[in-house]
Length: 236
Image 1 (cartoon, rainbow, N blue to C red):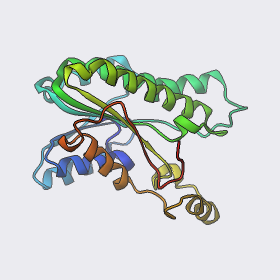
Image 2: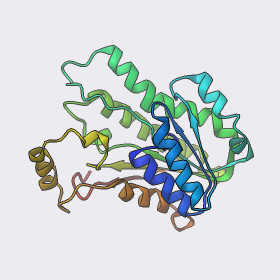
Image 3: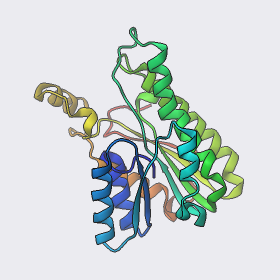
């Protein structure tokens, strides 16, 4: 579970722990939330561990792949890490584009490529994309491009590994109450809510429930899907 210590990642980690999976989560900048989450999961009776890993660094990802839990076999792989710098599309420069693509897209590929030999024969992979990977954004062209690349790579992977018994699906969240929206003014928050047909901002738990379903046996005939979890905000 990459990016598993905060926000959506933390909710997914908790939910999958409730489902009975032991949790190996990664973080890159904030160790305290990740370690506190690990303590909470362990207190619930499920084993968990947090590993510092910069997914843009091939050496660190390769080291992650040598962790004993990885070597024992992976049932579920969730690729959740990401960065979003909110840069106007007209002001985007190559350096920012490279940083975003390196994290959101190439980092996911690096993790997959490093751990793929440890995936169990019927492993389930869930990639956290974004609605912006389909619709684009004037203040996040780099983010949108990275999430579009991520989704199409994941859909291609689903076609390639299906015969092996593995499934790959993509969750595309809309507005979710995480750090990305923390800077909203009350007026902006109200405007967002008004945009959503269900008239509320999504929660990390909304995304976690969708992941839980997609990696379950109940979804064993679903692969290569992009599931938009957005309260009706965007209907592609």
